[in-house]
Image (cartoon, rainbow, N blue to C red):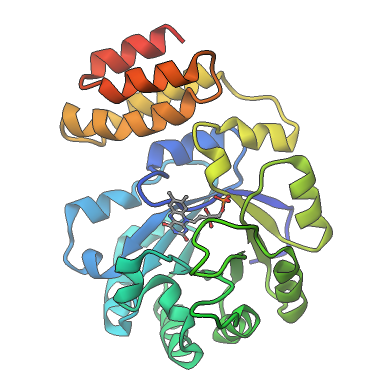
Length: 301
Ligand SMILES: Cc1cc2nc3c(=O)[nH]c(=O)nc-3n(C[C@H](O)[C@H](O)[C@H](O)COP(=O)(O)O)c2cc1C
């Protein structure tokens, strides 16, 4: 990645960062958006559900994220033309979920640096696009993130994203702020900060230690405005309009009303969480079974 302006990115979030939400965050100023993690193994089977995850319409730097550990599988899927629509391919070495780790994927990649080196160098070689890697402090009590980051750099990776928690911490506890500095001091490639970015002070701190950018995850849920707020830029449209756009775009994505409603209820609960009577509204949303109910609620926001 070339040295450029500080980047505000939407972090990858499985089951959350759909193409419409990524586009909306880009409208609000996200310079980079990342798909949710996509299984190389599932891609090999050309599963329609998996290939859909690559839909991308934002005007930001486009990143898709893969996970897997089998070199042959990764090499095979990287031939897919679907990657032409992206600027970077990110490799997930941070997912803490038991079912992912059990298969040797996600944060399990941090268990054995030499094995990870084989996979990541093969990935860089086979990839039609520059590769980035997202990882954690470590797994199983071994905080080897500096060594891991250096290995990625040696493999030809373009940039790194550190979520400074261990696999065992999951999403709780504080991020280790000194870890970002340690990694930045150890490598020459850009390092992104992922973890608990919420305020301008958080961003200023990440800038001050030399981060190339921040990736924002949970604080963007129901809150694409976080990007315009943090950048001090006017919002392109209202929150209500963002909700309408999100829902409308997803109408072409889900095949049935039932699946759309079940999925969108989650986002709607996040969208209303800072509104008046949020608790009551969220209880109402939980009961929704039709699109009409969702649209009526949006009308009255
Ligand atoms: C619901 C959810 C899903 C996530 N899915 C992914 C994922 O698919 N790939 C990934 O690298 N990180 C994933 N993460 C981790 C985030 O990208 C991010 O690193 C982490 O949440 C810390 O940043 P935050 O405090 O800004 O949320 C996920 C996090 C959440 C909360």
